[in-house]
Every structure is written in structure tokens, then in C-alpha cells.
Image (cartoon, rainbow, N blue to C red; front, side, top):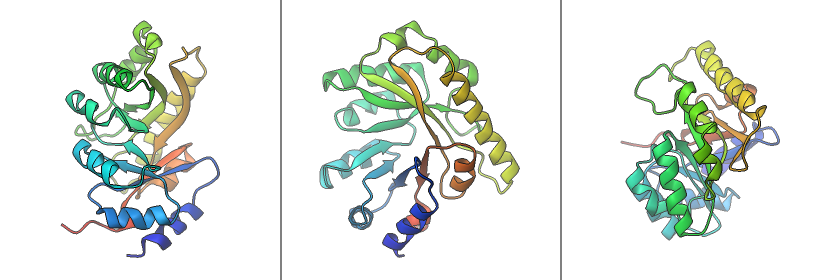
Length: 222
């Protein structure tokens, strides 16, 4: 598996203004360093323990993004260093991130994860829950988080019409929120949609952040 070549190929497909998050979950540090030496600095992990261990072991100019489901009792382990949390799927979690970030005297950029897929197993906020958070007086006073956009995961299917429809739905929601009057703690600038199998579709629907793993590292051997 030629990681350097794969990263270069993925980058060629990305228009200006689209950020590549290389999904490094389950990958050994050696593989991550290959991508690092190719100039990649943003990596995504989905488990807190693995993320914290890699942060300790790998170069300190790496930006670590938490892209997996995050439990409130695990926030404290990543709050001092995480660059962005993509997977904020409850008001309770947002409050915990704000509390833990305060201890490190920082404001953590967060994306609100919206449930757009047909699978019930995927996490995320409903449209009503999203609107409740955006309009909350309490969120407006939070000094240690910055809501910078939305994240969504499409249905895992070969039906591209379904996937496009789900991405389009999230993009419309993003634009709708963006057009309203927002407090300083909220700024709609990032739309994190698209993974290895559907990131090109996501970009066409307006994604500004793509999360790509297996296209770069290959399918992880079981």
C-alpha cells in the first residue's frame, strides 16, 4: 500500500477550500508518519484512548480531530489538545466540552453532528434538536466552545441518489442556519460530509471537510 501516492491522488481530487482529514483510526504510528512526511497534518480518530496515545507519541504539530461518538466522561482526556470535535450529538456533551476546555483555558472548535442517514445505528441530532441548540441562550454564553459548522454521515449504500439527497439535506440546513442571526459562539463555516466511498459526491453537494481513511491506508486487515 503506497500511502504517499494515495494521499497525493486524493489531494488531486480536492478543490480549493476543502480540508482533508486523514482517518487514522486503527492505523499504526508508522503509517501515520508516512502520511505526515507527505505533508499531511490533520488526522481523525474515533476512540479517545487511541487518540490520546497517538497525540503523546507523534509530532506535536499534528491537528487531531475527534470524529467518532464521544462519551461525556471521556471529554477530559482530549480537551487539552484536540483541534476539533466533529461528533457533538447532544447538548449535554456540548456543556461538558465547554467545562473541560475551560480548565485548559481554550475554546474547542466543534461541529454539530446531524442524523441524516437511514440507519438508526448512526448517531446525530434531529433537525429539531439542532435548532434547539443553535437557538439556546445558554450556548450563546459558552466561552470555551466554538460551533463552527455541521457534520453528517450518509447511509452506507450503493444508491448514489440516496447519498446525494442526504448530503443536500444537510447542506440546506447548514445554509439555513448560516443565514440567521447567530451569537459569537456559533459560526457556520465548515460542513464535514463525505468519507472514502462518497467524498466526491459530498464535495459536489458543498462539503468543506472530507474524512478519508481506507482510500489512503487500504482496508485494515482484521
